[in-house]
Structure formats: structure tokens, C-alpha cells
Length: 157
Image (tube, rainbow, N blue to C red):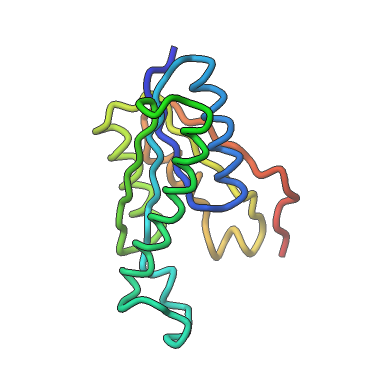
């Protein structure tokens, strides 16, 4: 049914759940996976400069994105053949909407036929303040979307 799954990974427990679901589906369907991390330097601007071990926020975002991708690729390749797993790092400079749009655009350009993402299950004030990446992806994409909820309790205010 599916030939190419694109999986968003961010190093969280929730994205690991999404990756595990995608791996199981890829193994069952014999499809290939592309693992994508959307790095965003803005996430590092809240850190005090003395904690930043890189020359810039962009370098920190790239380093973390590559670390996340390497771990996800290792997990996927342990379960699938090496030729079935690819990865890509995207760099966003604005907020979650741009990150979601970049992910969706990349999935479409790569010919993915299913997009797999995890959701953190935030509610209330946290949802209002942080938004939902999954909701934004859902609004932006025309591709089928598999959203995997965290197996942890939703974050409450």
C-alpha cells in the first residue's frame, strides 16, 4: 500500500514512538523510510549564552538535529535494511508553522505517500502557548498523516 514513509523525529519519547510505529509499518509493507529533523535555532535562544557550546544558535540546532537523526537512523537500520532508510535535516528560522510547512513540502517533493509524526498531547495553557506541531502539519498537508500520541499522560496546566 505505502512505498515511502516520511517520519519526523525530534529526539523526544513521542517521536521515538512514532518512529517505532513507522518501522513496524515499513517492515510489514516493505517500504522505505526517510527520517527528517527540522532544526530551529530559535529553540536555543532561551538558553543562557554560557551554556551554549557552539559558535551560534544555528550551529547548536544543526548539531542537535544531526545527533537526533543519527540515533533515529541507527534504530531504523537495526530493524530494516540499510538501503530502506534515508535521513534529511531541514533548517527553519521562524516558528512552528514554518517548521511544519517545510516538513510537508519536503515530504511532497520526496514523493512520500504517508507522513508519520508524534504528538505530545499538550492541553490547556501549554497548548495555547506552544501550539501543536501535529495540528499545523495536519492543516498544511494533503498527504495521509499518521499521528502517534505519546504513551505518557498528557501535559496539563
